Length: 39
Image (cartoon, rainbow, N blue to C red; front, side, top):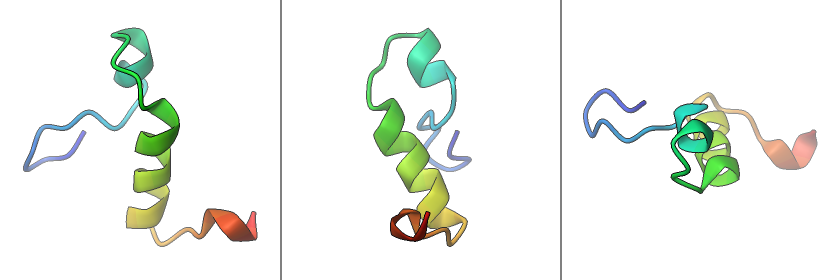
């Protein structure tokens, strides 16, 4: 999760039925500098 906002960005999104799992992992990839278009 995000340290500042407490927004969940991991498997808890799936476990707790929060939705947005793909979008959360895309955000994590972007924060890590991973361009998913290259994969």
